[in-house]
Image 1 (spheres, rainbow over the protein chains, first blue to last red):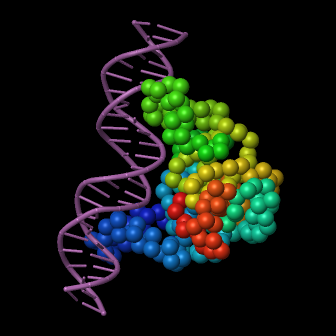
Image 2 (image 1 turned 45 degrees about the vertical axis):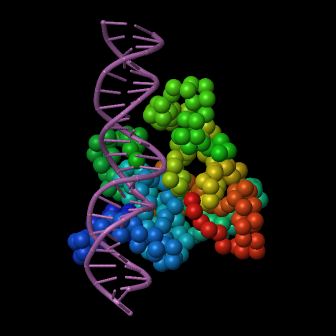
Image 3 (image 1 turned 135 degrees about the horizontal axis):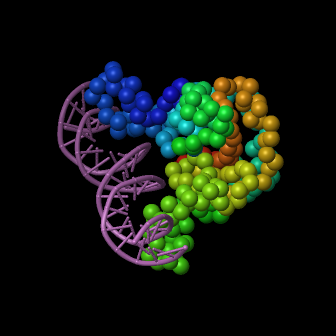
Length: 124
Length: 124
DNA sequence: TTATATGCAAATGATTTGCGTAGTC
DNA sequence: GACTACGCAAATCATTTGCATATAA
């Protein structure tokens, strides 16, 4: 889960301290926190939303097999929004760059189950 | 909807010709088509998946207000996956660049409802 | 007549919401 | 007592699936 937990990963964590919290409360508080800019709700692909306590813009990589998300510490594409502005009629306010691939663990599984075979059994 | 329809936009379209199709069939066929590489299932943010008949890699912009998606015809970041590889331990297979903003229509609404006010009432 | 595709409805998974109540000022 | 946050359960939304039947090879 790195440090990009989903709502129910957080629910499980919080539960260990407060066994009576409800999932609804977790969602509600994540909402409040992200509306107040204390955390970020990540706009990535995948089925579950993930949350990030790191507020500064940065990029992510997502494992197409298990859904894990990690940071990718490369420099920001600082001018790319201007490039986009000149090519489309939207009022552009931001961008998201997401890399896709296999995390170290899933990569290992792939190699065990089908050595010398580059094709992945995509699941997501 | 541009040309990046969601499953149920397609369902509505298909329905006009085949009034008895079911939404399940639409989903099933979108699945088959994307597994066979005839269409692409876009890995963007937002709650509903969108589909694209354009197979070549390209980038998108998504309206944070109404969800509309359009192409952004800027050049591909051809080396950026290498940059990412040197900064993380994933086996990287691709990337997605998504711009966020307001589409022309929603932008107009914003200006009408709150002129001279840059803050948007995000809804998504 | 065998395989495949479909309709339909129920199931699933993620997230949201209504409502009544416990805790706080 | 009024407010707020919460637990709980039901509701909603997007998507998937099981199953019985229609369709095609």
